[in-house]
Length: 218
Image (cartoon, rainbow, N blue to C red; front, side):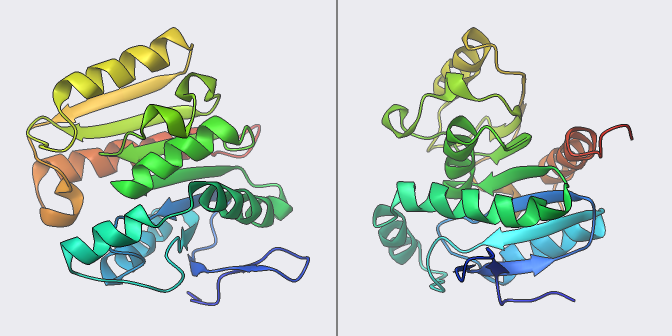
């Protein structure tokens, strides 16, 4: 049954978030600047229905908003080191039964997912939707997980040149990455969930996660 009780790490700590699903592949989902809201829970439910155990990790300690300015304030206050620590602890808890763990994020969460993948070699896969972190957050060339990225060609926040540079950085570092571009703007999964870009990006991501998080020998 889905639960908002989070994940117990085994040493008395509980990582806050929404847990759903029973699949052997484990995915930590990282939210946008709006927090673990109803839309993010629906995203976790959808991924669980596709066969994964999903943990929508709460980076904002229970705070949610539908106000852009408030969300930006939440983002500016985020402790990125603490965020990565929580992802590491959650991944360790999820993998206690030997399942592989990946990370998937949207906007802010997409950037945090890439930082986590660069710092945590235990993560097997990383899916970033319209998120690229600032260079000082992490050396993305250190990523050893497989990566899939989704970006809108009309995104005013992440221009195409930045996506090109991101793709080139990963290639120079030997990171195995699929970078996809769509006729869409920023946040197209949230804003246009039934649109062609969102549909195709989701389809590609589920196929990617199934392949990378499949049990050994499957």
